[in-house]
Image (cartoon, rainbow, N blue to C red; front, side, top):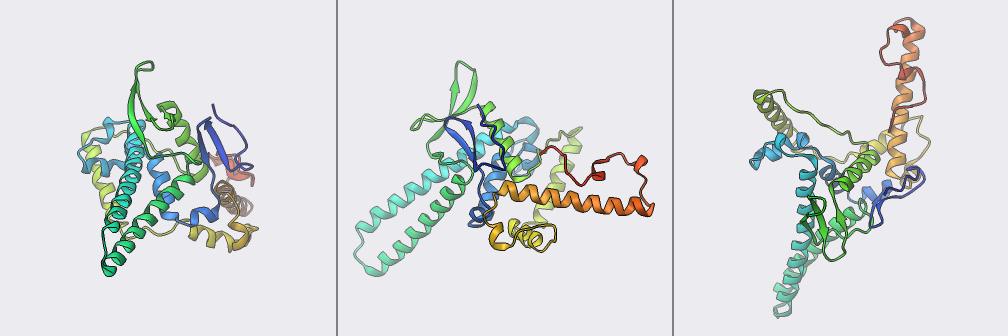
Length: 284
C-alpha cells in the first residue's frame, strides 16, 4: 500500500499505514548532512556496494541479498539507539551518587555528549522515516509467509522484504541514488573488485566532505537555477535534486546543439537522442 502522491507536492510518502518515508527539506538535511547521507546510504546499499566492509567481517558479498544487508544495517541503528539510552540512564544513576562538584561537572559533560549523539541519530532517522520508532525492532520468523521479518514488539510495526524493497526504491528516488547491482564472472574477478574498491576507500578515507553544501553553492551560482541561498533552503531534497538533474540535462542539450550546428555532431549517428530535447524525459 503506497501513497502515489506526486513527489514534488508532498513531504512524505505512505508505504504502509505505519511507515512513512519523509522527504526532508534542504535546510533539515544540512543540520547533519553527513549522518543523513550515511544512514540513507546504509538503508539502500547493495552487497556489491559494501563488498569491502562485508569482506572485512568474513562475508562473501555474492552470498547475501539486499534484504539481508538491510536487516543488518537497520538492526545496527536500532541497537545503537538502545545502547545510547542505556548509557544515558547509567550515567544519570551514577550522578545521583556523586557529591564532588568537579567529578559531577565531568559527568554532566559526558551525559550531554551522549544526549547530543542520541538526538542526532533520532533527528536524522526522523528525516528518513517520519516518526517511526526505530528502537525495539527485532528479527522474527513469520510462519505464514515462511520468511524473516523485522518486528517492533512495542509498536507492532512490521517490515518484510516487500516493504523494504519499496522503502529502498523511494529513498533512492528522493536522493538520486543509483541501484547498483553486479555479479562478478568468477572468483578472480571478485577478488580484483574487492581489492580495487579497498584501494578506493583508502584514498577517500579523509575526504568525507559535505556533498549537499557544495551542490547548493554550485547551483546558486548557476544562471539556470532561479533560487538564492535563502530560498533554496525551503526546497525539498527531491525538488532540489530534480532541479539539478534538469539543469545538467539542459547544459548537455545546449552543448549538443552547439555541436550539431557546428557540424561536429551528426544527429543520425547518435545512439542516445535524449540530449536533442531540453526537457529531461528520463524516468526518475
